[in-house]
Length: 177
Image (cartoon, rainbow, N blue to C red; front, side, top):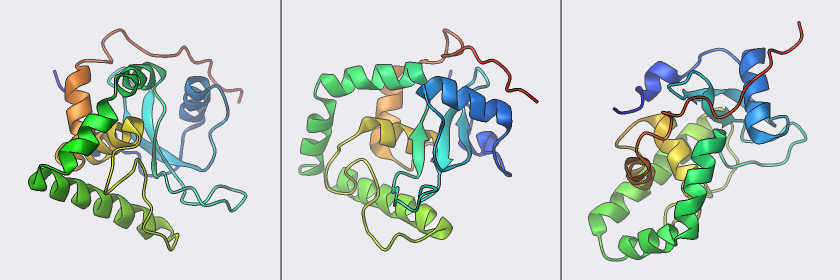
């Protein structure tokens, strides 16, 4: 089974208080710069949020898609600890097609972020376009944008398999009215 399509998971207008509470439970803190839920886990909870290019205090925040699912974050951390990012970065130097696809992922990420608010920087996230620095960013981008946009996000998701099958990663208490 594959995760549902990203387009079907995007919310159009703001963040529901229940989603904000779920994200806070997943992160262990209140989310900052939260714009919308960019991808929902098949369990129904947010798994990726879109953040503002600037935090409420004006600090630039180039990470447009932020992975919130605690279970998925943990599993990705295991891959990072195994040195997967170094292996991926090495492949960029030997596979021109992969390097080109990764460059396109960088450009897509940059265009999406700059359409919200330009930061006047070519820095995106996760090391794009020349190295792989953070698999969490690539998975978040792949889930939010859908398959075929971020090759390392797609690859990591394929390696992780059905990460969502145990059910929700957190138990949420509805926010007070």
